Length: 203
Image 1 (cartoon, rainbow, N blue to C red):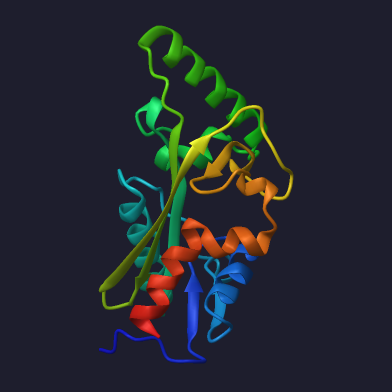
Image 2 (cartoon, helix red, strand yellow):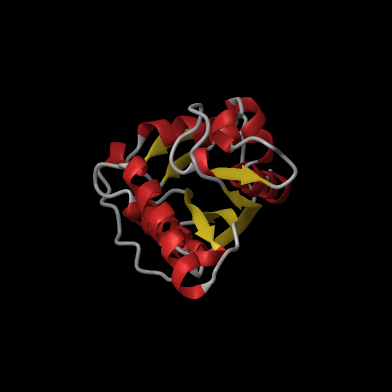
């Protein structure tokens, strides 16, 4: 079994989000035909693992075995030192079913204030992680992980990003992800770093 990806080959993006398939195709430089698990009617498995890598592997293997094709899945999130790594793998869940990240950022600000006032936790350190898993129908999986370190900033700044971007300022920069152009952010993002590893290993 070849563990390399062949140009033109069909890949399953283990997601029901069509926009993510477009993003994945761009990250893979348009070399492959990317279709979503949702377009094939495949159910999304519960994310029951305790790590980004575990959840990425779970989703990729589930899609690969269901479709009989190579599948790619990612799991990503924001971890904050003062909150003992939260929201971490629960980053999306903190935003709720309606993806209300404004509310999630309010919760983070409140929790960090409580941690500072009651436990003396003053660290602003945070990091974004992206775990990418590629799985073959035979069960083998390859995993790649990208991480970008930075700090939490309040009040929020910028409106060009999404999710938690307005409160994350990467190390070495004086602007947040949400103040960067998409092109500038993509050059240093955790997702870019993970895809860079994937391309080096499997292209």
